[in-house]
Image 1: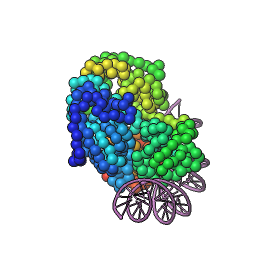
Image 2 (image 1 turned 120 degrees about the vertical axis):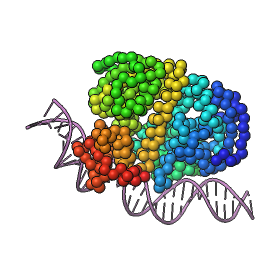
Image 3 (image 1 turned 90 degrees about the vertical axis):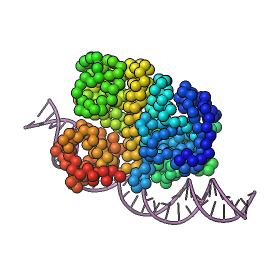
Image 4 (image 1 turned 30 degrees about the vertical axis):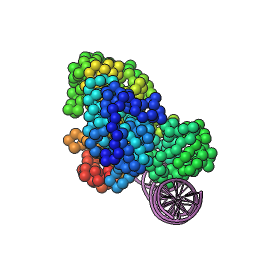
Length: 229
Length: 229
DNA sequence: CGTTTCTTTGAGAGGGGTCAACATTCGTGG
DNA sequence: CCACGAATGTTGACCCCTCTCAAAGAAACG
């Protein structure tokens, strides 16, 4: 990794315009500490870091999308989270990454050295608090996702997924999913066929509209909320 | 809650003898800050706090066992974690508890006010770091559990559970499970019958021995490790 | 020692997985 | 801008793992 086009810049608080600047948690950390941030780009399906690899950097998506996942020895995959523009990922309290990360589509990230964040946290209590808060946010998502994976039906999982993506990346009532059906399945603990069937059923019921398999408009969010149990 | 026998004491670092004093993370926090810790007891199946309830206290199990869980509207339950003696639970970065907590059996906990921990973290960077590390530990467990819930078979889940409990509460090669089959099922995303059948099968294969349904001896940990994929 | 709760086991059903074929979309180069 | 090929998505048929429902057995408790 780290063998591509590389731009270095001293970061004030926010270098690049992000879709949701109001929620720029990364800037909240780097801003206080005057850290060096670097931009970096990955091509579709390129690995950003592997599972159990030393956690040298912390990342923020500038554009594109990232999947974090774990694998079983026979190749079964569980995606723990999708990271969209503005999201911070790869933040670890320990020495190594617990999940691998790959670019879903061509993606640009900003990154800072973990060591410098740790150092800043040792000096500035506000930075330390921000790191804790970000990890706690990841934990909240994981707890919600355990409920989905352990106890929801296929239709409920897909409904939950659609509402999550609608919230996170809908523009003008429409969302452009960056990930394929297999990624969605591996996120929801389903097969790609089951995801496809659920989406078709929702389409037939008029709950959503397609313009291409990955361009979706939700036409009845209330029905989806009811389905998500 | 908080309507039972109540003992207050000023905590040095460790008040009560814990089974695994080497891993006393709670003491690492309270020790530095000279916080007031209180002991409190709950009866079997008593609620400690509810989902979305204000997070006023942080807890450590002294004796007994606790389950943390989420419910769907129709009563389906996902247990996110079991808390055993020495474990800290109920630690939140935000204002409220994301999961409910109940005593599995009669349980005694030590508790400190969240506010005083926050305050200590604002003064002492080491305390802040400890809070972050504890939340990161919970996140690691949740990430592993998502893989289990999303991608493992029933037998793999039970094998993983047995190895986890063996690691956490085995004494002299034997473990005394505090929780019933339904709790195990709700932790593993299975029904209690499926858990029972998997345990019976492992028993028939000689992988484990019973002395009462909840007293289990692992006779072949390697086989379990192979099963857990 | 009786009662209640928990666990085991069986039989049958169903939701989601698997395998396969076809359709659509997208990227690429003509 | 279109044509082609590859990748992605949809749909169908069938199967199997786990769930559901039921009953008997074992353990815990007063």
